[in-house]
Length: 405
Image (cartoon, rainbow, N blue to C red):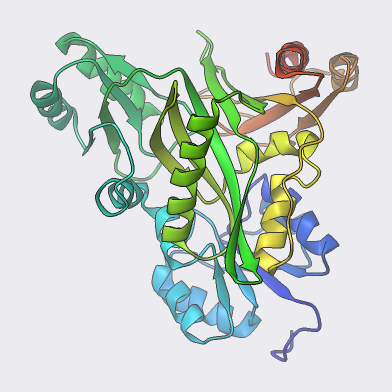
């Protein structure tokens, strides 16, 4: 490949996960050339991108050399990227822009840093919190802070591994539950918080882009979510949009989200997790790749979260117009599951039954080999209101789930 400047805007995606396919298609529809840069061959995106490059995303020298060779206009960093020095060097050239930005790339690799930034630098309302790395540390924190206390893993699937401790005997089970949901191959870290009264958990998607008078921020309608973990270990995360909020709470949510997005800088889509109780809103976390929640917007918004991300990256005008209330259920593989492959012989019949629900759609993620908490399937539904949409999505998910008994 020649090192001359590309005729199309070149975008390099570092780390090509399952859900980035929608982002690739959105970028390509806008005329961009998309290159998947990953640590192994045959990564999920390699069948849909324009080019592929295999490098060690944790090796600064190797990644820096690849970026110099590719000369992308935009580099989109994923959570898999550990070579942050290479990203900084790319930005220092003045040609390549990093999405979502240096601070956003750091957030993807270090969620603890973001929580401290939100609380200590931005002064956002958060429950009192502690990060711990052992059950002994958790025991000491509980002794200091008292009960009730919420415990959840740093990382892992949305809502997974959470517990509420109300007595000393809850400490060991809460630690084990959280650690089991932590990302593999990294030392376990757990977030302990003083439990606050919460009516709902909400994710607010926002896209930061170039405006006429500087950076502009557009908000999507709030997305409610909850996790459902079955006794057999099956995890399903339910999403619905719009989530009803008072005008006071919605204004507070937008204010928190705006402060977070502008503190991180850069461009593209952000997802801010919020805890809502009446008119009170607490900051819960932020992700620079809120693609699970963005799946719902494929049916609820004129421009999906992936299309908003693509437009934000390329500096184009966005809109967040909703076209219908909707709901989704995302089905994950069980912990300890050895495969994500469909085990039912007549999968077409199952999908057909699922689609018999009014205004429904499904996505089956095709995996030949599974690992714990891999996305298996998505049930989507729209309706005249969120109650109807949630009921429809639940019925679709019940049928779709029989593909992985």
